[in-house]
Amino acid sequence: MADDATDTQPTNPSDPQDPQKSGDAKTFTQTELDAMVTARLSKAEKAFEKRLTDELKKAEERAKLGDADRLKAERDDLAQKLTALEAERNDALTKVQLAGRVTDVDYALYRVKAAGDKYLAKDGSVNVDALVKDHPALRAQPDPKPGPAPTHGGGGNSKGFDMNAAIRNAAGRNN
Image (tube, rainbow, N blue to C red; front, side, top):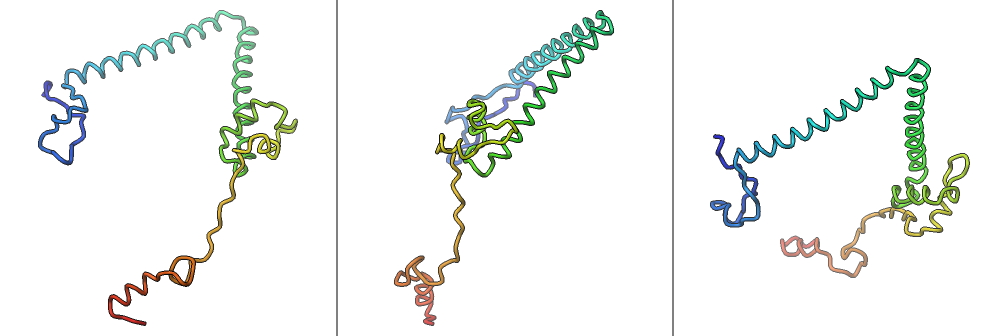
C-alpha cells in the first residue's frame, strides 16, 4: 500500500483505458507524497515555533520592565492596533460612499487615497463627482431597465418572421 501510485491526472474522455498516454500530469508514489507532506508540516511547525518564541521574548522583555514601562509598551501596541482599525473603518466608509456610483470600488478607493485631500473632505465625505470627472472610466453605467417583451413575432418589428406561427403551420394548426 505504501508503494501504490496516486494518479493526479484527470481521466481522458477519449481514452479512459490508458491515462498514461497524455503525459500532461505527474504521478507520485505514496512515499513521494509522504515526503512532500512531511516537508510542508515541518516548515509550518518551524514557522509556528518562531512566532511562539518571538512572542515569548516579547513577554519576557515586558516582564523585565517596570510597571510604568510595561503599561506604556502595552499602550503603544494598543494605539497601533487602534490606528490600523480606524484606517480600515475609514476605508469601509469610503467604499460605502463609492458603491453604486463607480464601476470599480477598489480602484476608486486607491485613487481617493492617492489624491489625498483632492477628493476627500475633512468630514470624510468623498467628492465622487470630481473623482469621476478626473477618471471617466470609473463612471458607473446605469442598469438598463428591461421593457416589456414584444408581443409580435420577429423580435422588434411586426413584419418579421414569427417562429411560433411557423411551428403552428408545420403542425397543421393554422390559427
